[in-house]
Length: 110
Length: 115
Image (cartoon, rainbow over all chains, first blue to last red; front, side, top):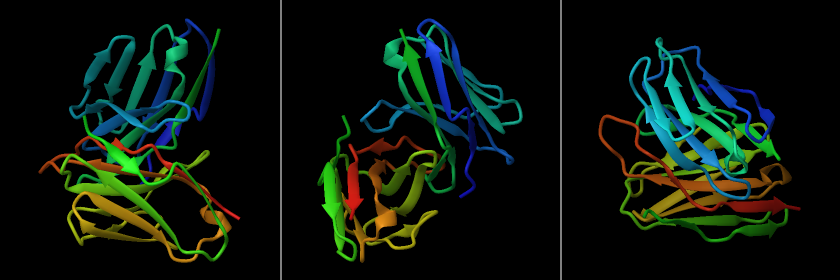
């Protein structure tokens, strides 16, 4: 499957700073999902975006799907230590299959 | 809550050994998946299954096979383990919604080391 490009690979922030990770595809995406994996844990579903230009919020997390449905972003406002982990996007690959991005590892320093 | 369990959290095997990784889900999900996770490479799909006795290759099936004899159980088999198969292996399941891409639920992972 065609993998989505996810940037950055790593991000260190001070607690309270904002954080954004981006997923980019060369082809139009039918939908995109976001997952979070805590250190030592397994990926856990956060959200799915389906519509062009869609914006969804979960407390301090804001998820966006581009107008052309070729990119998506996850923005965290005022990071906390509980936000530490790796964030993955996943594109639909047909038949309920997902192709995941390479992930962005977030570290939050006090 | 969906529960996906994997037979071992940590496993150490020798080169050439046959290795079985077991995954069980308790939510009557149609779809099951095996991924491997390596630093900088994200989650890569090895094999998946839509139904009992059905399997399809993912992106990196070489060196692996799978078995799904019962709906709740999906096994990953390394016929002859090699050192480059040292990795974290994650199993996942999803309900199998028609016409869409549904949420995947992951197991805790098996960290396999091949010596």
